[in-house]
Length: 345
Image (cartoon, rainbow, N blue to C red; front, side):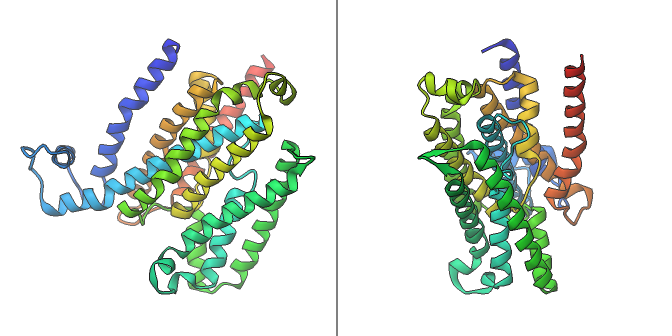
């Protein structure tokens, strides 16, 4: 590990607790930094720190802290998924939306909303949109795999084209559903498509842990194979990499991770596309460093973005997908201009 990589790891890890304290401190209900730190210390058994009120304790513990945890997990998952897909497609413009995962999930959510499944009774009714969204992501991936499979192997170019086609079709059907929806349904679909972490609670955090942590670990385990695969598919085969297994495993783990994120928070763009780019500039293209640092940076960026969403129009909230697009677009264009200047010398 080079000195630059070590410094990057240490710097980002130092920023994590700072982001947690900032995310739990700021908001419509003010909690001072010292009180925030006292509540967190008290949570871990330090009974001497009690300079806070019960409302502050409850707001931090049951509203803000699960939201910060959720934002960090989703940011990490989207960033790692983007890094993995960019390695698989050997294309820096690849992201989870490229093969139709996000569009399929959004279509399923729209169908669930227009059918009124969220109003059915019981546990399934409460989580019907999340279940439908996750199922939509899985089904979309299965369709893309079926379309891209030939002679017992998966063709990356065909997968890319199939993903573009599925994206277009899902977008068209979602648009038709929006056209048919009433005012309340339109509001729900629009809110879902813009992304939000407003409904965060510990139940969702716990449910999301295995669906995010496990895929991140499994994608990280493919890092060496992705490094070899970067040389080319034929070269990877000659060096002993089971290319078809690599494609299958990576896309499956990305689908599980992204499907879970969209199911909980809706559509959040640019994290999976932009974070791996920034990480490559910091530590280079080696996937072992790229994946883990993308995870930390993605967690930080989405956590900060969510904090800004709560502060910009307080006491209301700005949908997080809007902010990530506003911040991500100029930054991404700046990176493209920088790369163009490097190429032109």
